[in-house]
Image (cartoon, rainbow, N blue to C red; front, top):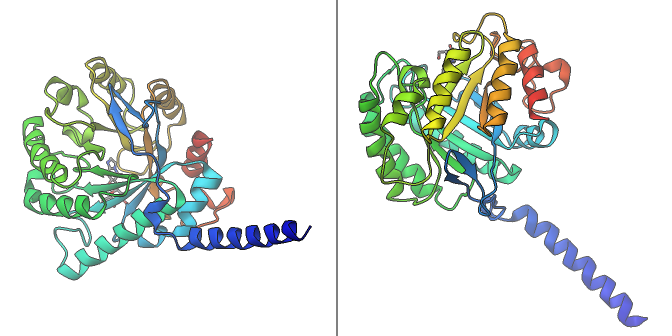
Length: 329
Ligand code: IDC
């Protein structure tokens, strides 16, 4: 009898200790399984296919408030996402390469919070070098090499981090330019982290995956190639390109998409969006919807009339937000 009581007391305190150690545990202790690339797919340690599904932030300089612990945990639990993408513009509004040093520090801080919140919420997280108006990734290659080297060194123990090295090359940037850039950035990342998954952008706003498939980067594991689409603008012809790339064994990752037109505005094309979803799910391609923000545009997931940064109800979501959340379930 006496022993039983002691046992209960001991286990009560043990439970308390476990609870608190859980709360104060360094975040990376709550590890997600590291992912690998096998064939065209993302797999876990046991070789089982993993399809990441989630949302992309809008530019971190514009909307840093959506990078918060409660919001990330909420989306995981209520929406069923398993990944988030942190979009860090390089050249637009307070971009990493066009803003000052103070701005760069602020962006790196937001990324650091994002990585840690994601780890704690049990989400994979993509660090996105969001080139856009700086069409060719070679424009800021030096900055990219040093940025990614630092990130890879900082986060090598974080099994949830994925690196996206150039959002959308455009303006006629050739695959050979991108390939050369990717060679240098991937080398920099691999000097610190041998395994993290790396996403490489493709020509024409990350659409010409068929060109990348003709001469992918060699000599490294765990590389995937970005395919972006906006269903209001891109349909069957782009899925054909994607199919061509898959047939050649190129691993694809949809790190950004929408169902508005490519401007991020205009009306939604849900029918085309559904055709895309069918294609992605059939091929187990990961996808991240643009964007977790309340900007007044049809590609924003949250209504511009609201300012909540977590705990969104259906009524807080735009038509696109509601549509996307349905896809996750
Ligand atoms: C858009 C944003 C918009 C912003 C613009 C320029 O939605 O608010 O003013 O960028 O910074 C992309 C890009 C992504 C675009 C999005 C919609 O990766 O940055 O965001 N889009 O135009 N590629 C295709 C569409």
